[in-house]
Length: 377
Image (tube, rainbow, N blue to C red):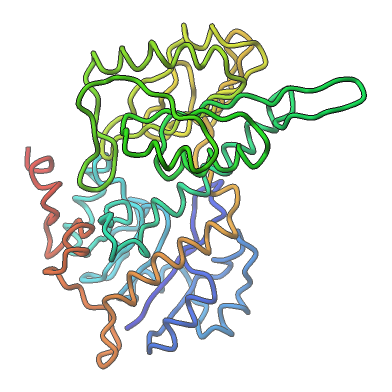
């Protein structure tokens, strides 16, 4: 089976889908791996390293036309769908809830598309969960961005000139990204508070050194995949009332709230931002799905009333070496989980719960049960 990895085309994308270490594992299983020239350059991997790992370097068009399995990070450019080999398996992020036209064109090409965002959040699939691995790095980067932009230091410091108080950091959302942000801010010496609609995460928040902010929202919880459920308007109002007080007392606010497959909820209003001290910093980690912060702008840093609001996308991509290492491991584990050693090929087992969860197109149609109704409406 021929596995191909084309070079990512996004202007600011430095991550790569597979690192040489994973390529070697697949080559040892009998896969024929081909990569596009300079595919690994963004994360400082050379073509020679891939060749030494067992891959061949080929042209982009040849790779797309001949490979049985194509691996990427970003969704494929629409103009390249017809270049894919009919019957090939394509693995990448797809954003299938928003990219209907692209997904339909992939189905028409009779390409079997796996969306990495839709890997089930189960114990068995944990090693393939790229959303979690990348979110963890994004949470770390968000705190470093805030620390660099803030006009004061994070830790308490006792000096001959007096004692400097620690920065106050308020993190909204204690999922994977939020928990890593909590841990990083705490390690840097900040005084950390965190809020989440799921009371079940209180113990995790406290174990990382932060205070858990409690709000009586009535019945909340999480989906079967571990995501926070969408709140009602009344619950959002109650949440905002409490959060406004904590935002006003904070030097840094980091928002991480997202609802899978939907626009991110608006959490911070301009009135809440206006209550913050000039020089404070807000990091909107949900900017790619619409943003949690009123006034935040995609890929921009704006200022409202002296408060810096940062809406940079792809935070994990700012540490591309480790982000590539983690994504490569996730994709490699997915392939190896369904690798037939005798036939030396990736087997698309449509009866398996993992494949059922992440396979979007199959046999010329939108196949995923979660997407069928939306695509047929």
